Image 1 (cartoon, rainbow over the protein chains, first blue to last red):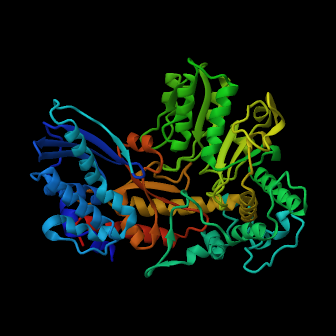
Image 2: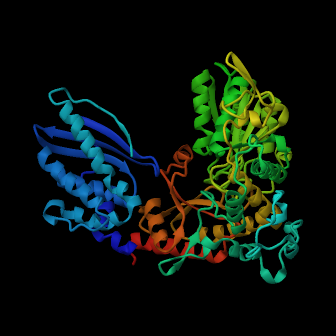
Image 3: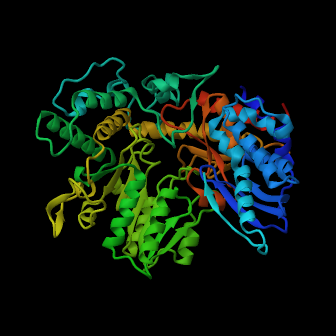
Length: 159
Length: 461
């Protein structure tokens, strides 16, 4: 696969205009994840309403792959129940570990299918998963703090 | 020059096919500044043409592209004589050193100690002043541990580093200060990537509380060559010890540790055409003699009693356990190889190729170099950011990916120097770094690929 094909138009569009970017209130959990090898960082908040993901907001720096993947992730999980969103997470995670061999389900992953080429480049898989892992961590923390008042939690997660 | 007879071991020289150029074939290493070193017909980059046949990996292709290795500040490629010497050691002379009394043990010990002698000669030190470690990081950790103990560092004392250091010359000092209660301070840099000595002097950064001053000789990000002698003078004026991280410097600059003025100098083998797994600490012998052991174990002792032990003299005191034997043999051949070419010639090549790179890269619209943009007091590592014509920063990982697709190996990230990147208000950068085998054609391929990458992300393609 050529590098140009890896960087699909969908990825570049998300990179140039990230969806749901910025930090918003309210939220039940906030996490910081970093990629220590390149310095990419994401500060991400999750707001739940019952079992439904009402909002995911974030402030991040990083490469086009990590930024676009985070943008796509927010499109996919906001509005879903936690259970539904975890199904999507699992599908994306499987896609990224497929070494580019998978036939992604566009009904499940929508714009996420554009990342199939990234899976052929093992060094970049963790770029694509940075925002997803932060979301999963924050959601688990938000569920853990359900019923408690809104608070800030921080975790440093080295991949 | 890796003349096999110079291995100083009692076995026949191995076959001499593919031998590198001998010193006799080379132009004078004595006066490169005059331009007389290079044969007129060969131009300023003759050295690369001369040595490339010794580096088989540089002949590889990546798809349809020739491999363009521009990551030598990360690790250098290895010439055939170095690899062959390591193989020969393992295949014909392998034994443990300093304790095996049989023939192979004697050969291995002689080869290992021969490596030490070669490295000492290469940097102008005495053989017993060369301590082998596993890498430069371990050498710097050794300095932090032993100096902290020797100087009885405590609250009120200060350790001074710089913001342009590799993490391995920041974190060991942070840990030392955490252990002892001493305070860590640092030199800032100017916007053009030089140590801000004026501000430091005005603020009294190095003062009577300062016990240790440490700095990199050549920055692994900015390429800046720091005035170690001037820093040593400031340190010594207040009775402090000067530790230099010479990991990027020793490979590309003629080194005389006494002229440098530092008390302790750390560097690594693998950036110096040698193998991984071996680092070097040179120390002034009268200082080494006063330092306590770092790691305990075999070979670093004199007499061991259950109630306590006495320790060997330097350098053995700091070399607990089986040392990197084959690595020392390989490193000895590596420094002989460089000496044969002449370090003045290596430095002249580094200067010429860096000059060419700065010319090509500064001409690229949207490219911003971190550090000096003129080839003055500057080594062969050039870090930069790249933006499209509409101002979109192309992330170094994305730059690296596009370059890699064209067979060009660079490093993208913070290069283990996060505080420095923060100082320049960027999270990361792309770094191209050069060595004696780097050709101007490789620099031109880099420049072309950067323009292509910029325009791809700028939507111009």
